[in-house]
Length: 497
Ligand SMILES: [Cu+2]
Image (cartoon, rainbow, N blue to C red; front, top):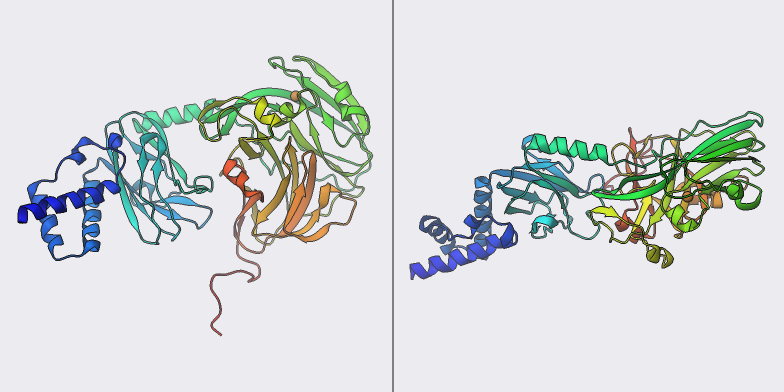
C-alpha cells in the first residue's frame, strides 16, 4: 500500500514539477531521474493528510529546492509601474529593470518569476525552448529550471501578446561574463544607429528678418540597427532617420546642396514640400554617387513640411529612411514653449518577418502590397523608448512636438497616452487657428502636425499611432516627465464620502 502511494505521489510531484520546467531538451537529465526514496517518502508523508493544494505547494517547494541546487538562480518580479518590465530581486540584479542575467555554458539555471502587478505574465526564452506557466494573480510565483549548453546571447521575454513590445524583454548572457560583455560592447560598437534624438531640434528663429540660409545635406547609405538583433541597410539624409530638422523663416532664401556619398549604390535627390517649383527641388538634385548638386528657393509659405528623396522607386527611398521635416516659421516666430521635440513615423518592408534576427532585406512585393513588417518612430524599433532617446520633460512644462509621417504609405493616428493636445495644428497649418483639446490627430504620409500640451503629472507617457496593432510592430515612444505634480488632477483610489 505504502509503496503504491509513494509511486503515485512521486508521479504527481514529477508532473507538477515538469509543468514548471522546460521542454526536455533544455532540461538537465538529472531532473528526469526519479527522486530518491527518502525524498519521495518526505513528499508522501507531507501529502498523506493534505488536499490537492498542498500537493501543488509541495511541488512548488520542490521546485525551489531544485532552484537552490542550480548553478545560478535569479528572481524576477513583474512590474507595470512604468511601462511593462521584469525587475530583478536580490543579488546583483536587485532593483534592476530587465537585468542582464549571466551564466556559463553547462550551467543549470533557475529563474523564479513572481507576479508583482496582478497582470497575467510568463517567462520565455524562445531559443532555449524555455516557457514558464502563466501567472495570473499578484504574489503568484513559478520557477523554470533549464540547462544552457552554448555560449551566446538569448532574449528572455514575457510571451503574453504585446508584453514583449511593451518592454518585458532582457538578455541572458551565456559565456564568460567578461568575454560576454566585451563581445556585447564590441557588437554594439559595430552596429550603427540611425536614430535621430527627438530633442535634437535647432533653436527657434524668433523675431528676425528674412536672410539667406545655407543647408548642406549628405545622402548616406549605411547598415544600422532596425531592432534588437536585427540590422537593415538604411538610406538617409546625414546618417539619421529622420534627417536633420531644417528651420528657417518665411521669406528666407535657402541655398541647398546635396552630396551623395562616394560609396553609395544608388542616386538620390530631395523634394521639399516647402518649395514652390517643379519637383520641389527634385529636378535639380538627382545626384549620382560621389557627386554634389544644389538649388536655391525662397520660402514663401510658413508651415511645417515634409522633405524626402524623390528618386525612383520613391516609395523605396522613403521607406529606407530618406525623409525629414523643414519648419518655415511665420513672421515673428512661434509662441515660446519649454520643450520642443522632433518625431517622425515610417514603415519598413522586409522579406523577413517582424522580429527575426539577422540582416533584414527590403521587399518590393510587400511595399507594393502596402504590408509593412516594421513601423518606427525615428528610424528603429525601440528608438524612443530607450534610455538615451526617450523624450524628457519636467512637470509643469509646455511641450511641443513636431510630428511628421515619412511613410511612405501609412496614415498615422498620432496620440499620446495620458495626455490631451491643448493645441493641435491639423495638417501642420501654422497660420490657421489650432484646434483645442484634441485626443488623436490624423497625419497623412507626406504630412505633419504640430501639437502642444502642458504636463500636470509625473510619469511615463507613451507616444503611439492609435492604430494600435502597429505597437506590436515596433511603434512606440516614451515621454518621461519628472518632478512633483503641479495640481492634483490624478491619483489612485476614490475619496471616502
Ligand atoms: Cu534616395
